[in-house]
Image (cartoon, rainbow, N blue to C red):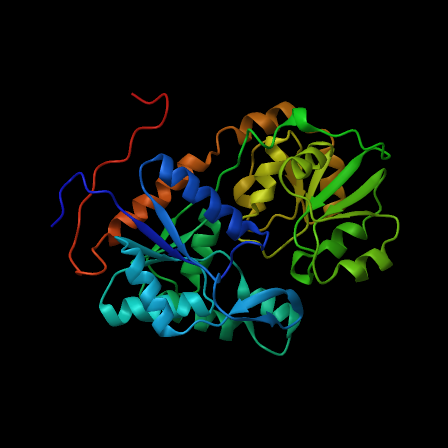
Length: 361
């Protein structure tokens, strides 16, 4: 048994990593930064250094091809006290196999609706089959972390066990109203940010009869098609950092047409910029916006967009200030605490308490 002052070391196995730009990568990057501030070092087992192949229907995304030996060596070199498996790809599966073989507890997270994504591209494959595969993948985990209460309820109804909440946060220093760029586009400006792919349902947004300008930030396999079909919309391609924050803050309404996202961090980023959200009343928007006066959820997306123009930008910013990445990191580390062992020796370990948040007594 380790002493109470032992530092926990977390290893996260993930198939999603830089240069990918998505919610999973942003979440893991922010988690690591905030966990380290709390005194917990986080390392990653990522696709870096492994051969890879392009994903079918999405050539800009690559799938790593590791071997079990390489995965074992990387885990043992990291000497973690806690292992978290963030994705269900090849790296995730091999890290899971290692833990099961060594008798090590681990946590997982459900971050992507692969069943819906697969069915959107291959309608002949029933969602139930994919959910059965995912249910089996997550079953041995001590905790499967999910981002929202409604997703937790949905997965519980599908037979998933040992679910725990791990919410998301936003960088309110980067995303803030003062960064708004003067774009010179007709108002109102309706903006959407994310991967330009079929599962994001951008067509539902672009087909709306709205005044002003419809603007899309992001790239992906559907971009060329949508540019052709909707020449009146403004496509800016991939933006990040201050450029992304400045264009997002310039918007009048953030439109989130996806019906498959498990959370949608970009909703919080828009709110931090003082931009209200218009979305369908589905998992993700229901949990982020809900009944709070920071957006409008409606099955008629056009009505939601128009009504959101009347939402207070001040209220949006104030709401976002209550959703920090530090709080998210504390939730994650609380779950990691349940599987803390010495991976090499296989012993249970203990570690000191996390420091209090700034301003806490």
